[in-house]
Amino acid sequence: MAQAPSSTSRAAAPGDDRATAALVRAAAHAGVEHLVLISVIGADRVPLGYFRTKRRAEEAVESSGLPWTTLRAAQFHSLVLTAVRSMARLPVVPAPGGLRFQPVDPRDVATRLLELTLGGPSGRVADLAGPGVYRLDELVRSYLAAQGRRRPFVPVRVPGRAGAAYRAGDNLALDTADLGRRTWEAYLAEQLAATAAQPA
Image (tube, rainbow, N blue to C red; front, side):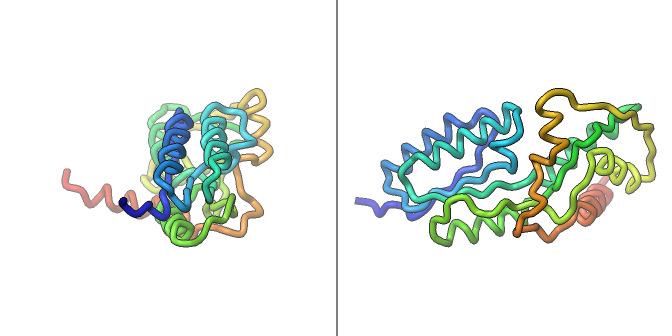
């Protein structure tokens, strides 16, 4: 009989709660000794479908009967950059009031996940976020400034319970003990330099 793997990990994506539940069943059948999940900060606080899906994935792991570890991370720098690039193309950029992010470098998350996977099951560990908190318009402005471009901004309000959750900082980890090392500014400079170095 093949030796059972000692650990496995799963990164939940939107709509991925059922896939995570299927993985949990397979892991239990295989005798996995440590199940590691990456989730998102605010999974149980921000009333949006994406966050609810993440929370259901967490619950599938927590109720699996397997030893587990869950790390909630902030949005990756790379995801934020994709959104910022799209917004910077608009002739007028919306500036949602109270919408803040604490983006984290994917390499910092990967390092932390490796540590957790090699360690013992720890349940839900401290959230991992980046070292800085930014309004969405600040992120867009920094991208535009780095390219010597400007755009007009118009204030908008995010309505409903989701807007209230963001204004309350429910997607942030302001008191976390675990902060990534790489800043948004360093990541942005790195990515723009790489783009500039590509042949035309």
